[in-house]
Length: 97
Image (cartoon, rainbow, N blue to C red; front, side):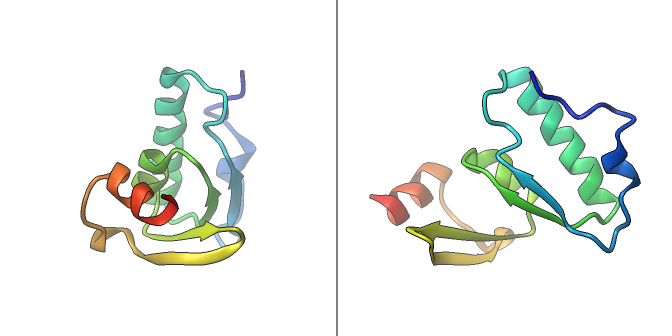
C-alpha cells in the first residue's frame, strides 16, 4: 500500500518546482484513492504545480486546471478542464475508440 503521509516531505517542496506524479492511484483501494485526491487538492490549493500522469480520468480532472490527452505519444486533445463538456466516458470514447 502506498500513501503519502500527512507530514510528508512533499509538502515542504518549494513551490517553484512542479511535483511529478506518475499514476498515484494505481493499485489503491477506493478509500486510498479518495485520500490521494484530498492530498492533491490540498497541494493544488496551496499553489503547487503538479505534472500528473493518471489513467483515472475522474481523479485527474478533479486535480487539474488544464489537461493533455495523449495517444501513441501524440497530443490528441487538451485545454482547460473547465471547458470540458460531457461525461468522462464520452471523452474517453471520443478519443480512444
